[in-house]
Image (tube, rainbow, N blue to C red):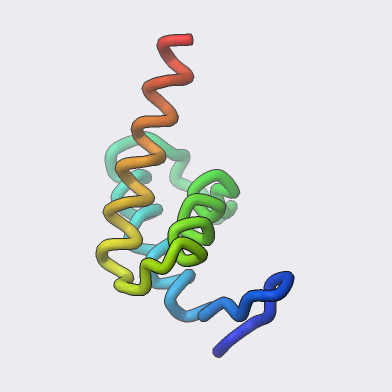
Length: 78
């Protein structure tokens, strides 16, 4: 299913699959709480990666995880 987000069509299935993979990993590692609430920062990273042209759900999840962890570490240092 495609949903228009601004001027760009977004594949909701791709977003949700990549989010599920990344969120599952981050929950198990303790980086995000184990709840049903969507982590907006993680979702934003996935959307941004899709806007940059990434379309493989595994690569999306892995890149989002890496960026999320890098941002978290940078915030901890600051």
